[in-house]
Image (cartoon, rainbow, N blue to C red):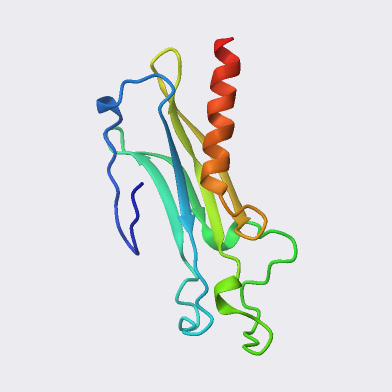
Length: 141
């Protein structure tokens, strides 16, 4: 698991990973920042991009604000400290996509650009990895 903050570039050398079924799940997780809200427009252009450095090809590019939020989630809802435990505030995890090594030895990127809240999917990453493992087992049988 690799965690980065802000404007960081992550370089993954896929050719070093050769085990069929290897999968990388690309996510962005947000936290409750209502107690120290950002300046107006500070995250207006927040985005992520997946590129192939060898070919300089962009595989995926998405502004965070263009990804539809789950129904009923209000990112900017005011804090009511009397009624709400700030630790109970759901977080959002954006799932950009996944990269996996298929049975033919080719790396495949699937773009999802979807988000989930922690109140509905508390162990989202583990759930998605488990789904992937089960699908791989079904393919083998």
